[in-house]
Amino acid sequence: MNPHGSDDNSYLTTRRQFLAAAAVTAAATLFPVLSPDSQASGMHNLPPLPYPENGLEPVITSKTVGFHYGKHHRGYAENLSRLIAGSEFSDLPLDKIIIMTAGKPEKAAIFNNAAQTWNHNFYWNSLKANSNPMPPEELKKKIEASFGSLEECKKQFANAAMTQFASGWAWLVTDGVRLQIMKTGNADNPLLLGLKPLLTIDVWEHAYYLDYQNRRGDYINAILDHLINWDFAAENLKRI
Image: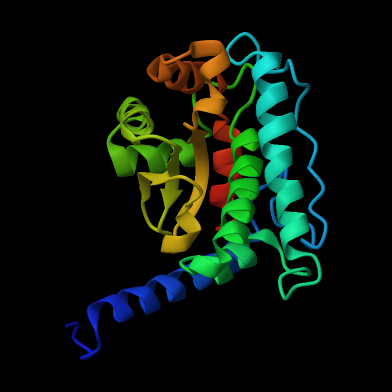
């Protein structure tokens, strides 16, 4: 039992919903380049990439981006549009759909497609060709305060991505005070815990298998060394 005398599961569910709802308020201020939440969701057209399909080469090839973005990401967006057409969700942004359908088995298909559309929108912004290896100064200070050093942050980020069993995501997030590294399975994301994402790495196999086969670690390290978009993280941090 929790201190309020209610059932533990009920208490945790209510707290999770409260934190997630609070996160939605901040979510609309994220994503300066490719916004998951900028469009009413009755028709979720696929947003354009922030770079050409070959813009991440040689770390991620145009063939992988073509399949990942053009097939998988597009499929989530189109499935969502079909699932919510004429429903109570048809005029809502992605983040609100995610919160309203999380944990409801009868809404699982809507949740999965909404969350995967949102996550992928965020992922493409988390990458940048020829990215600056050093974060902007304010973010760098936050990283050092939270992890001790940039290298330790990258180490924890890589470990979270590598140890996520099967499909999922690794995230750099903030609770409004400190930065944290976390991982989520399948379509889940930090909004459900009231946390605010700054960066993500997709570790579903379709994100890397054409280029790296089963070498997930090589894909993760290549992103952290060459593509991770610290500027995007810094902009998200400013908007919190």
